[in-house]
Length: 344
Image (cartoon, rainbow, N blue to C red):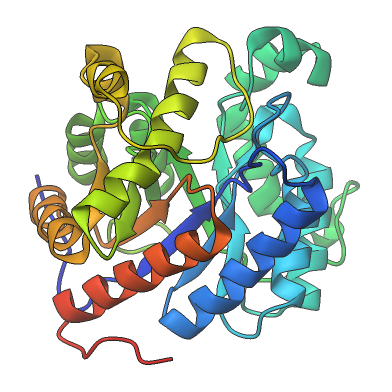
């Protein structure tokens, strides 16, 4: 497997706007913005918003709208979609939305595109009855968006005039090998969802590197991978925080999704649950512990994967504890990149 990893590695955030029990949706959106503002201070490169539907624990549903909320409250951090699940949408409307965002916040908007539903199949059918046909048209719809942003589209009958000529960075998101083939063929950056679907990470990266075709958008391969991080001052504190995540993942695996619960002490029962093979597979790249513990795991991950950029997600109940976790991770990356720790 090839790697373009040289020098400093950017670090970014994937935000799902997780709803904790007792928090309102407004609370969650305000906390997302506060995290983005802190992330900007901590040196994070991007702040991306997910797209999920019909999940009581996730408030990141109207991705473009939430992107505007974040971009409007920050100054320099890149804001993007992690991602727009394109088969749920019209490619023309997405082009219009992102062209609007790019005009409001010049040179700060990223477009990450995936083809998963971001929900269960029944809900996906409710979102768009012809969704399966749209899935098969994903490569064509991707190229349609590129066409709408092209200055050469000015003579076409169907246009997005406000998009024409805007340089809109596009990323292919995936959790399988199919997306790797597409990203390589189209010559676009590739982002892998190893934070919840780690099984095909190395195979997908290998496919992408070995089949990459340079394009007008990207001359050399560029890869990002996402991990979960729960960092605290001690391993014990981080373990306690992780009880919220364990309960959340169990809910996902059993189809009984609930609000993110407040952490508790780690019980023998939760310890046993955390050893379940399905849960361990899903949480393979969940780095939980003190700064030293997370730093070692992160360094090993970067060395093993050779990715060009690392993205971090987290499900932490307390907003201040979550900010502290991201602060610690920024210190980890600055030290791995040869800088001094953040002092803001």
